[in-house]
Image (cartoon, rainbow, N blue to C red; front, side, top):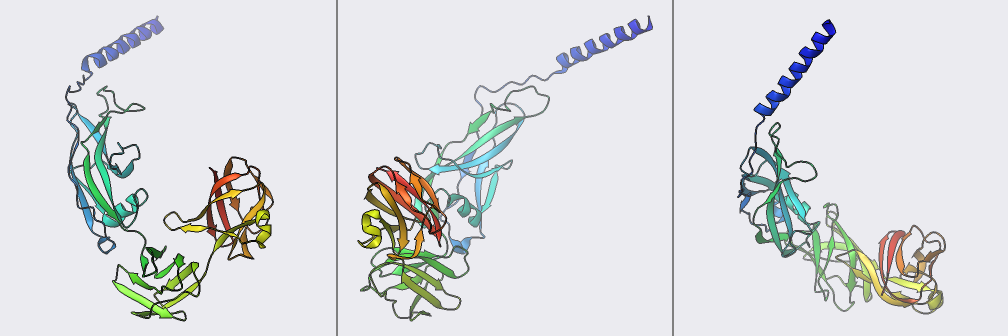
Amino acid sequence: MKNRIFILIAMIGLAGFFSGCEEDGEKVFIDDNPVPPALLEVPDLTLQRSNATDTLIFFGSEVDPGFTASATYILQACPAGNGFEDVTQIYSGAEVDTIKISVSDLNGILIKAFPADETSDIDIRLRAVLTVDAGTGAPGTGSNPMEYYSSTVSTTVTIYGLPRLDLLNSGMEQKIESPNGDGVYSGFVNLDDAQAFTLYDPDTETTYGGTGGTLAEDGAAIAADADGWHELTVNVNDLTYELGPYSVGVVGEFTTWGEDPDFPMVYNQEKGFWTIDIDLPTGPMKFRLNSDWGVNWGPGSDTDLPADGGSLELPDSNGNIIITGAGNYTIELVVNGSSGSVTFIKN
């Protein structure tokens, strides 16, 4: 009998609990015309290394969906006219009135999506993702979030690249860069032995020249010993430079392994690879430096290239690439000392 009484009391209690929840539950109404966030002001986005520590401020306003909710705001950028299909995220957080970011941090984000040392047209917007307050029962989180977007602001951005030295009077626009920002610059340059060049640092407005491996401010123009591609390394800390030929070529059975001239490749400075469009027959081939076997790149052991092209790692000088499908190829070769990687694109 006692057990029956306890069960009855428990059932009455549960019924009261659910009834209370039903009566006390807060109803949420979404406004028919919610107010989206607004991007009110965008700072000047001419980014310069000399102002790297400066703070930029984007001014915005909150979303108002018509009910109490917190929001995460995401500041997004994309190439002008892209429709935010290729989005670069600049900021994500709860702050929207004043979104602050340093010049160097913004440059580091945007340089992954836009070219350095150029002015690009871009679109910027604010995205608001709502997180509904606990207990309201409103939808909006999970796999189908409630999102609101500001109007798009179109502007321009200028991004600075790595510290660089520009080659002046070399016959074309060329530069070498300092990956670590430590005063040591290097790169591949295409030179004409009849066109001596100087080096210009746009950050310090300093011009360098030199002879015999010794660099000097406002020194004599530097002349190459021969035409063609060279590797240039400059150290402005101890005022030295090294300049030597660096010509990457395609060699193989079809060149009688170098008895006929190698097919020279061209360096793409912006993308960082050597490239060539070439007709290849079936059979073995590989790459070498300066038409000599002292430095060459291979797949480790003889390796077939699929007939429709593909990518291969080139860990050392051993082995040949076996072309299985004759045809015209675009080759993109990345070298890193004695190793590298290559992509064959069949045309």
